[in-house]
Image (cartoon, rainbow, N blue to C red; front, top):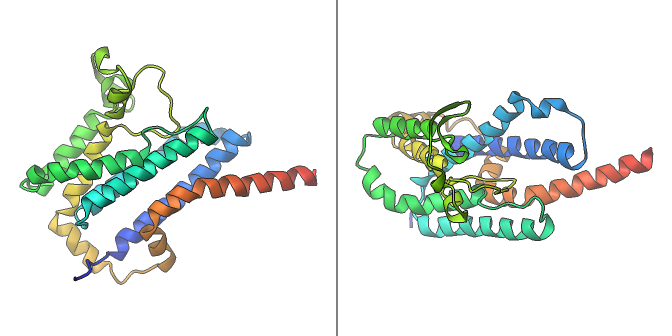
Amino acid sequence: MEQKKRYTMIDMIRGLTICSMILFHATWDLVNLYDWDWPWFESVFAYVWQQSICWSFIFLSGFCWGFGSRHVKRGLTVLFAGLLVTIVTRIMMPDSFILFGVLTFLGSSMLVMIILDKVLKTCNPYIGAFCALLLFVLTRNVGYGYLGFEQWNLIQLPKQLYANLFTTYFGFIKPGFLSVDYFGMFPWLFLFITGYFVHKMPICNSLMEKQEMIRCRWLEWMGKHSLLIYMIHQPLLYGILYVFSVIVQNAQ
């Protein structure tokens, strides 16, 4: 069987995103778990940093969906990883566990795209990408009860939509729901679909072919093993920061 080609540029971009995520989570741990006083982390710049990681992962996942052929296996694997994260955090950190996190969303989207692909593959990729991105922008605030983007709330949605965990899974967050990592199917599915359409643009495939001479082995490795790194990076960070805090306390 012929092995499908991997594009090094995609792996390196994913690797850079992984590095950014690890640095962000290390900072979050220091601020929230070890009371590190850093007001900047509450600023709009830190929020943009956090959002850049989310947007990149979801867009890249949609972009790379077209490279794969075992969509059911991949989707179920990522979905199971999300379930494992929920179970472990529920046991270890009951006050700040993860429900409907990014892995649950990505696994769900990979499976949903198997059905959507039958219709979307007939669309013009440029028009499709524009419409999907527009829908993402218009539905960005559905979790807060509105159609709109960030600070701009355009239309208030019926409160009946925000009823339970089932609606929360789709992006309509029920009152009192808490999760330290949450991604509803809406609006994020539209960003995933944007990546799906961009992958189909001829200009993108041409650019990827031209960038194959640029290599960074360790970034490629991180990009290829992004799921494994995501699963283990927080426990490793907790351990490293705990040892560091003990050393600091003993040195004082």
